[in-house]
Image (cartoon, rainbow, N blue to C red; front, side, top):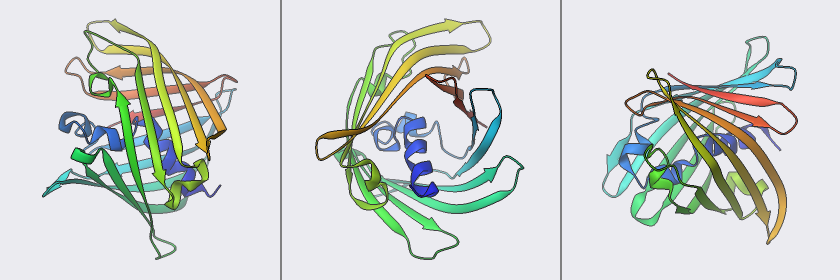
Length: 219
């Protein structure tokens, strides 16, 4: 699968889907005007590559929320190998988001529409009651159609630890992708998330069953 498509999907997964974040103005502001760095490691803790996501401010226009993200793909030698912009245009009342990918190297944009259904997502960082969170994301073809028409994400076994410096949430995450009702891909992670005492997300680590992992640092 082309690298930009894979990165866009994983970015949606890493932040537990911007389409759902748009349902709650407080949650989408977790990303507003921040630099997000994703680093990918093999099971021996060796850096494979990384991506940076430079996130703009949330713009409100009529019934929409819009946020721009500039992504750079960087190899293990710190060389930038690709760069593109993505516009996420959310319509909270419909729980939908339009994703527009704008490659710098190829001027033609690609777009897709995403609709989502969630259970307990608005309570994702309710530290007084960490419940299981389930999300179903439906793709209307476009740039993410490799994963088919539907993906399901579930976070469960969520446990909070507080060390008086930060809040740390450990959990498990299962993501399944379907095409024409047939599951074509499944990912399982153990997840560590760190938040400030004020509830601002600062770090995530997603570890696969084979020991490989990636981290997300929010600056």
